[in-house]
Image (cartoon, rainbow, N blue to C red):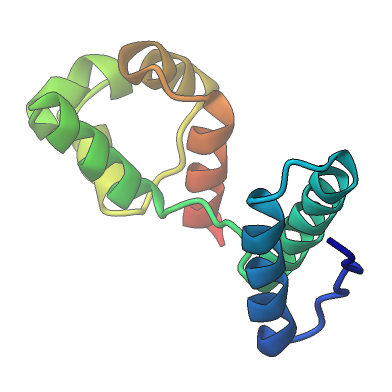
Length: 124
């Protein structure tokens, strides 16, 4: 199957590129597989630029983690220090300290980067 790579500059190009990858996936030829990988990388680069990932606000992240683990705000006291500190963090008035990040990372098994980025959004 002859196919050229599509440089993605807009939504129409994006749709066309995704259709090409879908078509190339059905081929068993090595050249088509290589084109598919290259086109998929171009799609990924476009999507990262078009829709960059952002860390969720810290209160939203902690609320999600608490829900997933069946916890309440009171359960965060040992991780964040005091009930008033939990309240400040959950209201977006306080950033996490590195000690808090470490405790939350260990408790919820999430990357420290995620907690730090979410905490930095509090300061912004």
